Length: 271
Image (cartoon, rainbow, N blue to C red):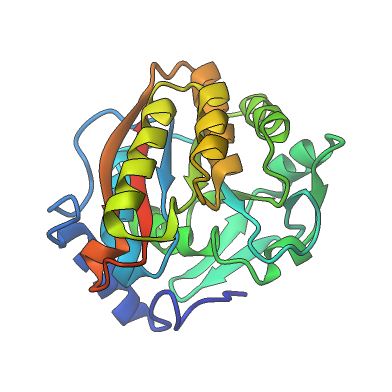
């Protein structure tokens, strides 16, 4: 069941579709509706705040993958904000509901991944979590309800766990599109957040996981989904990505009104 419908995004189908379209056409968005006429990336990093704040930035990542076809599933890795459930968890449910309909969870891929010792199937990890849920309406807008989803929630986000997860994802049979869900710096002034985040983004673009974790620690960057980001860096590098490409960075001070305490948002693709 959806947790943040009516809070992070509208609970009615019509209003939700309108907000998503406005995100693509927003001055901070890509400026056009999908599909994108170009090669689709292996994966994307995209924010997960309320659509009025992070939607235009997230729209850049979804515009980038809108040309993807012929894939077997979309893997979404999100942080576990609530602290419920297991360290790394996949739901045991067969469907995920949003105001745009039901999305099928790939139970065969879920079983394949949960056979690993550090990954469990546990609905509790997902029951009150928004980081994966807010990605679904964008995916449904692009592909309807015919896609299969593999949601992975990370409570444990250390480097070893993230790298092991990234390596495991690559071994799943079939063609995958990967989405890592994360916001960046939280509740600092706009200028300070932008400086910190852009230092971190440099190492994400270069696929340097060790340096990425060093900067996270040294700069005390409060990115909530740092583990999912490291996992997608690992997976996409194995899949053949030469690097990441920053599509758009902005803070909630640019989409909202307050610049004294903002959250950083980035859309990054791996090609």
